[in-house]
Image (cartoon, rainbow, N blue to C red; front, side, top):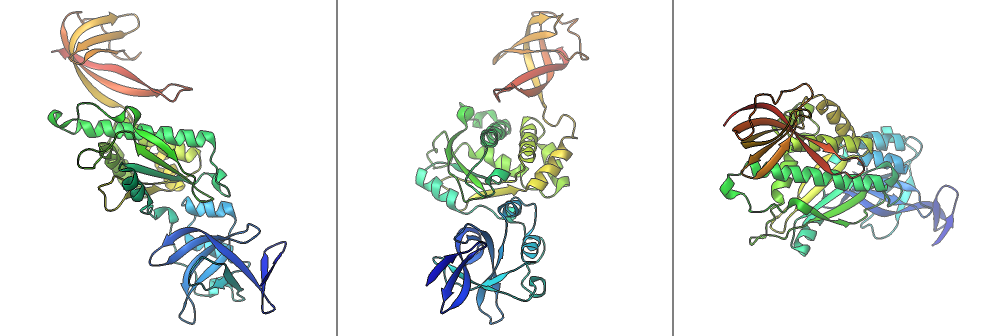
Length: 398
């Protein structure tokens, strides 16, 4: 066997017959055998191989050449499998047979148009709908801790193992925030007697970074706190709440209803994450597990769905604000600036008035009041940290 490097592809001589070969690189879909995978030729060309049943009744693969950016769009949920394969096979397409993927696949050029071959897949198969595999579960069991895996498809990752610093840092920041607010929301639903004595979310996740196959970027994060006596993680409370938000990403009406049910800082963090994905032109898949799981929990959103949902949710008024009720002694006031302080059982809480809101006239320092407030978060520019602002809406004597 002698291989020759050509301008367009690699050709191999088998018994004097010129054939083209490619080698497996990345599995995209697998069920009792490879169904969909990426391959490369020797000079770096990108291909997509799709399992089909050949005319002889044998298992085979339809193989088409696909540019890296087009593969990224497929992985990000911007095109479905039929659209990708049909477009790629307009110029040329191949059939291949293989018992395993450890060696090169010999490609046979086909003369019949792919559109007339009967091999085109049905419409609607979107790769982003696939759930992450059990790798995160294996890591959770190996580390004896909760693990969260994130997979994004930014444009810069189309052909190489790379991600822009601002994309990587921003992704971690947005995920940390949604996890933090999901945990706070989960705790509020618990009776006081069932709440843990101290929140482990101060440093919610430890970041372990692992680059994935070309065209994507995989980030694995580990819970900062270890498992409890039963092997579970307190952080699971937060991730279950995040799962609920991602349950209906392809159904805008259901997604909006779910976001409204989680109105407050959690919904606000969810909207900010969607805006971030849209700005960075990427979808996101995630999977998480703790050592007690038998199967990982996985969700996904495409870039197109993230863009649509962020536009819709941005129109929902007060989605990211939370209502807060305080009771205590009125101890601090600045009637010029509208700043105030209430001494509660948890300590001194400070807030302010909106420019067009209530007046502090009539409130008496030393009296006890019940304040109804809204809490809004602002991100401190340049730091990514969140600043909390309490605005007084109503008050009455307590």
